[in-house]
Each structure stands twice: as structure tokens, then as C-alpha cells.
Amino acid sequence: MNARTGILPDYVDLNANDDFFEQNVLDISEFTDVTILDDMGLSRLRNSPDTVINSFGRKLISFCKDNNLFIFNGRVGKDKIGMSTSKNNSVIDYVVGTSLLLQIVHDFEIFEFNKLYSDVHSPLALTLRLNDSFSGKKSTNKKSFPRIKPWKQEKSELFKSNIDQEKLASLHSNLLDAISDTETVVKYDIDTFIQEVTSILLQSAEQTLGTQRPVIDTRNCQESKLWFNGDCKKSRRDYRKAKRLYKKHWRARLFLLNKPMSTLKEFKRDCLDNGFGLEHIQLLLRDNKEDSQS
Image (cartoon, rainbow, N blue to C red):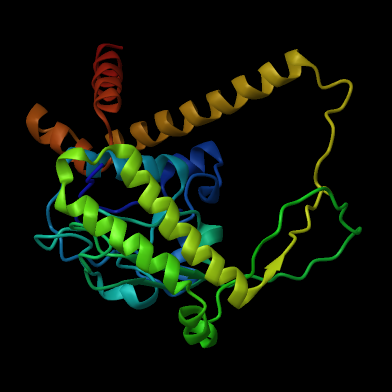
């Protein structure tokens, strides 16, 4: 959606000594995971070469704040320095995740632009530290289809040699014929070319890497309790909705207390810069008017 966020904070910065928390006996961790950044030695402020902020960027920031998500760009891995992801030094491609995902990031990197892969976007690579060991009951094997084993860089030359050159030459000839008469080319022809290229590459990968049948783990597949009926599901859904609304309403009130309204224009700008949408602004103005009249 071409969101440009500049270096707007993607978290709710709270003060543990705030009177609001003392009076309401609230746990800060229920509203923000920003302390995770401090524990991991990561900067709260993101680095970015893009200083532009647009409406889509504010919506993305608001989404992150409301859902306790963090933008990885300009914060972790090789991209701590902050690299552009598109033309004109702009950052419009992001990796966003929870604090739990952030803690298992091994590396995050933005590669140099290559017109072979995209018209304007640079490739993003996220590497995670995963532990494939587990304990518990044995998994139940169900019918599964074989899939190609993970890629191994040391087999790259073997992969190239296993590519069917005859099929590749035939495909290349058909492609040249299509290019010479583009007026007769239809979408079906393009899809066919793509499928043939994919088939050639997958065939080579299968010969090079081999296949395996994934084990389907059904340990966590639990049936619903008999007592958990439709009314219970509705109550749980209503509770979660009310909890989300409370968090948004609470953050709006806290912002209003810390940001006195000087002029309407400046107030709206402050709201937008802090990730509030128009619906939040209307709520703030309405509540502020009611408080002043009471």
C-alpha cells in the first residue's frame, strides 16, 4: 500500500510512574511490549533514509501500536543502519512482527535492487533462529504428499547440470516465436511459459535434493468441549472486541492528557503523527467537549 512511515514510533511509550497507572493499578506490559527492545539492546528509534510520512504510513503505525507489533526495518540485523527498499530513497516494504518473533530473528537484510526480480522494489531477507526439536507424544501420520527437500548451496552446480537442456531449448525457441509476434500472444500463452519454466526447475531440484514426506502433527488438534457452545463462542468474541476497544480508548485518553490542545489544526496533526486515525480524533474531540461541559 506504499506506506511511508519516516521514523514515527511504532509503539506506545508509557511512563511507569504516570499517575494514570498508579490510580488504576495497571500493568504497563498489558499495553506495550516496548521494553523488549530495551532488554534486547535494540534502539527504540528506527533508522530510515526516508523522511516522508503519508496517510498510509500513519495507518501502518496505528496498526502496529494497536496490535503490539514492531517494524523490523532499520532496527535489527544488517538493516540496523536503515536501507531504502524502493526508488527515490523511499521505504515502502516492511517486515512487521510481534516481540516474540523479534526475539528469534537471526538476521534481516535488504539487498541491492535487481531489475530481474522487480520493477522498483528491493528484495528483503529475514532469517530466524528455530529449534526443530520437541518433546511430547508421537505425532500421528496422515496422508501427505512428497515435497522437495530444503535447498543446499553446495549443490548449486549439480542443480544447474540437472536442468533438462532439451526442454529448455524448446521453451526458448517457443519464447522467441512468441516475442516475434506479440499481437497473437494471450494470457494463456504466458501462463504456459511460466508453468513450463517452473516444471523444469522443480524437476532439476527433485533430482538434486531429493524428496521427503512431511509428518503431519495432530497433537494440538483438540475437539471443542461439549459445554463450549455457541453462546460461549459469542461471549468470548464480545469480550475480545471489548478488550480491543478499551485499549484504543485508554490510549486515546492518555494521549489527550499528555498533549494539551492549543489549536484544532495542531491537535489533529499531533494525533496523526502519533498514529491515531480520524475516528480516534473524533472520539478525542467529543470526549474533551463532554469533559469541559461537565
